[in-house]
Length: 192
Image (cartoon, rainbow, N blue to C red; front, side, top):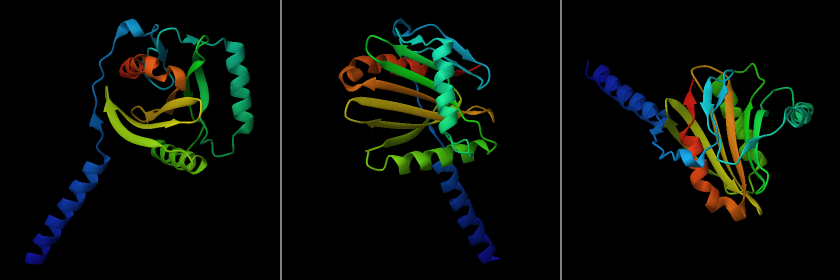
């Protein structure tokens, strides 16, 4: 009987640890609406958000060209994101990609495979990773810098919907100036 009690206690400890590891910290963002463009709704991934101010949606013809090139370069697993909308600040060359995955894998498998592939392909770069929850969405975040730009990449899925990424790419010289707009944009992401 004592052994059964000990096994139950160990099981509860292990279960509690596993549960705690997968829990995302709930983050609240200070959203400054003056730093945001108009709201965009994405019914396919069940979210809406505001891109940073002055980051305008690119025209459909250019988006189609980019989507075609991405699709041609993809492998058969569909673990590469395909842009569904792109916003740009043409003056500063800042870009925001909203992308989905064309894969039949389960959402968690897509996220894990994508993150592992991304880490392997970028093992020479210092990747800063973290997880958080905001407005009922669990995000995995990767921040990294290369010589001339910084990227903030968010990966998530909403209530068993498609996995999506939102990536903000900013030239290093404008990163500090754009950071508050990007934080406000991230804070504006909500479930439809």
